[in-house]
Length: 363
Image (tube, rainbow, N blue to C red; front, top):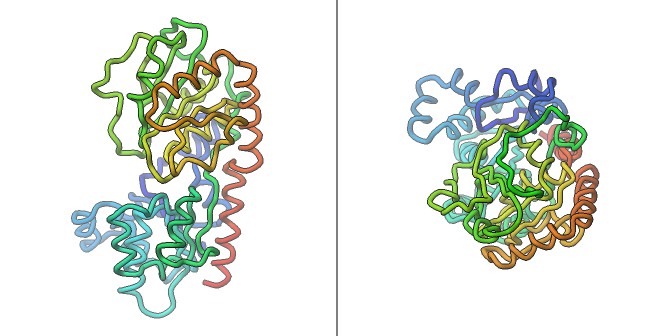
């Protein structure tokens, strides 16, 4: 048995490692982390097998994430380090560790996507559970600043780390001539936009209406519960709304001249998965510059930032890159190199493993 327990807030596909090995699916972060950390994985299915009557009651009351936190808490005596993959697990676990735990506890490392929302803020403000989260890993510098200032958490306990992408799977050379998408093309150039979280597709639709370019909106996400913001919109003739597997999504990126990330204002790294996948595929990015989305794209070097919810500014940026394809290609090349240098899955796991190793030694 290993001495690190890593939660996975979802169901692990039993065939995932075979799909990764076969080149049909990018390597998932939890597979890579479990290998490097030498960690045991705890997902919904595993937690349910250990739930018992009380665990089943907790899931009925608070959902699968509460169950996952409870099982993680129950298993705490077996591990030096508990690594929670998001605050949906980490917050209830911290509550249990603080108010139900006795004696020595394992180190608790938590990925924090966004804590600057009222419900989460109240829990930290009133109950002080930051004392039972030893390391906060954040993907946006704005979130690091917020946590440190609001709850007076020492900076060494709030670690900003760039998000990541499997740069082996998402690579231009992985797309073959046989990888062809059945798209109804009207124009020479194609651009795309992908995902659901805080996406501002109404602004994108307004911006591209009438432009001489085909636009594919892949309005889907494996984890986001946000509504599809294309719903109820009048879709222009040059726009297609569809869904793709990650394998076909790679081909869509490859076929596109560049990728657009339209966002409504928010203060965390919304859109970062798509941005990194596209950069790994050597594509320039046009992105809404929100409070949270400022740490990945280098404006004018790997892409262009535009004001959020501004169709005119977005249309101008799109028209500019369409007319300057060589510049867009150079941005894409720089983006790919930035991924390899800083934001590949390999680099990401190596960075996190430094803190896991330290926690293991002190846990």
